[in-house]
Amino acid sequence: MRQKKLKYVNLELLEDGGVLVDTVPVEIYHPNTFLEIGSGKGLFITSLAKDHPENFYIAMEVNMNVCYRILEKKKELKLDNLLIILGNADDLLSYIKPQSISGLYLNFSDPWPKKKHHKRRLTAPSFMEKYIQVLKNDAFVQFRTDQIELFDSSIEYMHQYVTLEEINYTLEPSNYMTEYEIKKRKIGPIYQLIGRVKHHAQENI
Image (cartoon, rainbow, N blue to C red; front, side):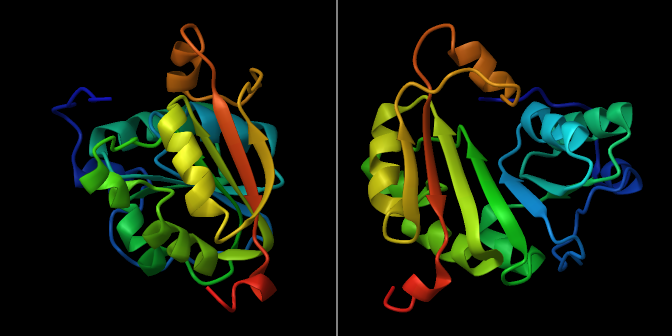
């Protein structure tokens, strides 16, 4: 979904607001840290952070204008337990240290429908290999989409790296939904996949 460009938004403005704009390692001290890659305007991750102050959350988003929308919500809700990263999932290992994340959320990622672009999908093997490195043992990966072909393909991608615990083709509404999910629920089903990391089972991958 194309986002409106905000003329007043720049790197300096984001950095002044506490957004991480440089590719530097994040110091994670909290034992329960959760990461969302592709956070959009941030409704999902900010709702979690507001309701669970005992946890720490990281929102990673590649679009500068959308990052600002997350920052607006963070300020409005006074969320001290949320870090925003302006960054690309390709650079994940430059930001996040090994086995420091307790759970990963992938919500309504770009489906990249053309076969030649499937490697760009955020559930593709090249990305799963990165996720496995930053996730703790027994951490979860939660993937949600409205694209059935992407969902079925992601089952095939992900089962090589995580133990599949849930494959849901009729996900019910919840208190934690993206702006996109709220809109798309009016016209069709939402699918969810949850996998669990077992590092001792990754040795042969």
